[in-house]
Length: 290
Length: 175
Image (cartoon, rainbow over all chains, first blue to last red; front, side, top):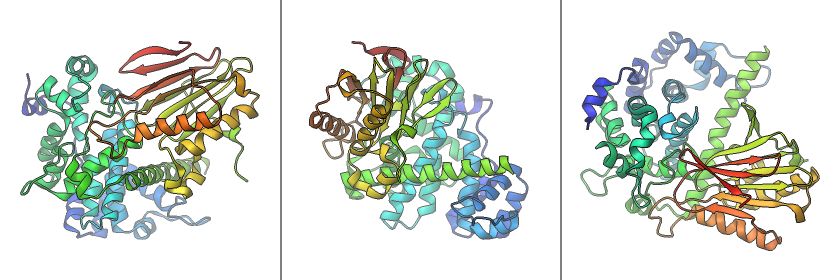
């Protein structure tokens, strides 16, 4: 049975984290947003520039009859929104085609990633958690290990894991029984290789099994864990794994997550995701028509 | 004025009418296939009139619209209590008759070890049954519960409903 390091060494097309994301992550985690540097990052990336223009001129941020150029768009959107757009774009490029090994249709893993970011952001707002941007980022990247599993095991994944699937087992337990590790572990390792901060790596690593006790306990991990379950209830990125996951009781109790709040979070997350998708679709249509 | 229920047409992808999450598609084209992918705790409700060849598929997410009345107004297919009436009204507008409808449901799965705290899938199933009981509608077939993902496919030529789980398909209706 191959171990995580061997697989990460072996996978030819290991998802590469653009240097811009590392820098943007630094800015988000440190809270020091440098608009000039963001502009430099954006200007060197055509796809990113287009995305910024689409956002700034979308119904969500724009004004009817007024078009903003790139510089105006950057100023208009502001640092935090720009950082999130950079992350969304770069993560989109990584996630959008992946997920076939998990039985996901094209784009489903990406919707799950963005949904996780929005759900984590929603929960962080409700609980007035200081590191809201970190919640967004970790929600977005939490399933990055599925990219590696997808690339390494490909179409064999289902037959390999099927022998170890049992209804009472969580899916990460099934993965560990089949492969010796699960997608969250390998995702945490990958994030480490990318040079992301230790706290982000740990959140990815433990997002299905958040530690309950100090000193390992971290509210950030709890929030991303809850966001993952919210995404399942919102019908996002459900593949062969189905709903074979558990909501940790200490997270449920610690966040005071009851049925009403959970269902509200589900509906709000889904609506925010649709708003983002629709504004992008509309902007693309306008672009095409113009 | 709110749109007529028959404006719900789904999205055509590769020759199939795809119903997204919190979405409805109504159809009177016998050559069409209507599909909704990856139901977890959400429920897919398929209805079909074999005489009028009218059918539809709803993919709802949550049981009750009172949780978010504003969003229910914008997206009634998100909730059982607002989505199910729209599905049936739309089919009636296209010529379906209640007494001929074949009604099939799938989905309503749960996360593991919920311990009764949330039970989203189970509450979705209960709300659906409640709505059907109140309106004298009988389920012809259902495949609900567990913790698995299900894809539902409705064939408009004869109303056959198949469910796909982990790559394996089985016919849900005719039983």
